[in-house]
Structures are given as structure tokens and as C-alpha cells.
Amino acid sequence: MKPAFLVPVGLALAALAPTAVASSPAPEARMPSIRLSPGGEADRRVGAPLLALPRAARSRASSNAHASHASHASHASHASHFSGSGGTAPPVIPTVPESPPVVTAPPVTTTASVVNFRSPNGNIVCAYVPDAAASAGVSYVWCQSRNDRFTIRVDYYGTRSKSYASQTRPKVGSVLGYGTTRYLDGFQCTSRWTGMTCIATVPNQGFFVSKKTWNWVR
Image 1: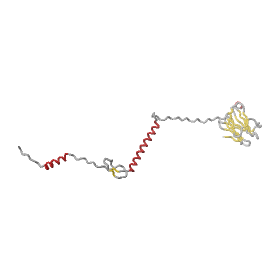
Image 2 (image 1 turned 30 degrees about the vertical axis):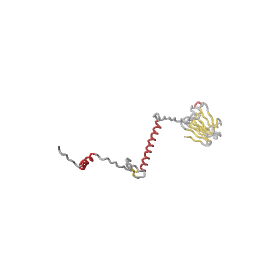
Image 3 (image 1 turned 90 degrees about the vertical axis):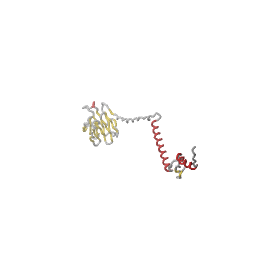
């Protein structure tokens, strides 16, 4: 039987120690993280977020978040207002155009007989002679200033003439008040305190006559 060798206990432990130390990993060191408290002081709690924002920055971030949320809510409300529950646009109400004003034509005297009229003071007497009563078959209007029997006329086509009558015309017919116009078939005569104006409406030509003067119109 071979002799046994005894090894000192201290040496055995020393030989085994490096192997044990190397084979068992060291526990992971957990370093505390640091964040800033609202007052600016360091907060060393383990697991705390790294460097929290200061109060001013957090206030701006919060304001921006609220503004973004309000903007999204406004857009959503605007869209829901127009979409409605059925997702359709609101009905369009048609606009009804206003009716044009009704223009009433002035009353026109149409007759186959002579129409007599005069100024309020009787100084000017006039007559409308229709085609049927005219010798040439063309209607006309004539007026006379009674003080000198000056007579002037215009026919339907605008042909004008003047003369002195052999006798004074009587003051017959209806009174055409000052500022009043009488519409005859193809003619219009307006009485004013200055005299009488008669115009053939188709050619737009006529005359003016008073107690003392006369002239062609247009």
C-alpha cells in the first residue's frame, strides 16, 4: 500500500479559492439614477427616470399637449357638425330670385274721332286727328296760340309745319293740367305753365308752342 501524502489545509483552501471566485460571477451592481425634483434638487431613488424636465419646460410641454388636444377636438367637432349622424352634408336651401318690378304703361287714347284738349288758362288749344279723320290718311297733332292764331303741327312720321290760321280755334276739349302728359296713339303732349310740348313718339320729333314763342323739339 502506497503511502498517503497529507496536504496542509491552508494550502488546499488557497488553491481552490481562485477557481471558486472566478467561477461565480459577481452580482451586478445597480447604480442609482438621478432625476431632478420640481425644486431642482437631486432625487436618488433607485429606478427613478433619468433627469426629469424642469418646471418651466414641463409647463410648456403640458400647454402644447393641451393645445394639440383642443385642436383635434375642434376639428372632430367641425367634421361631425357637417357630417351629421348619417355622414351627409346639410341640405342646400335654394334662393328664389326677386321678381322684377311691374312697369305699368301709361294710358293711351286710341280713337277714330278727333280729340280736343287745352291748357288750363286757355291760351293754347290743341287737337289730335286720327288717320280716319285726316285728309292725307296720316294722323297728326296740332296746337294754336289763341292770341295770334299761330298754328303748328306734327304728323305720325315726324313731318312738321306751321301757319297762321284764318280764325281762332274755340276753347274746347278737356283741360290738360300743368305738369300732366296725355298719351295719344303715336303722340304725347305735356302741358306746362311755360307752354305746350307735343312729340310724335316713333320719330321722337315735335314742337313747343306758347303764347309768345314756339320752336321745334329734337
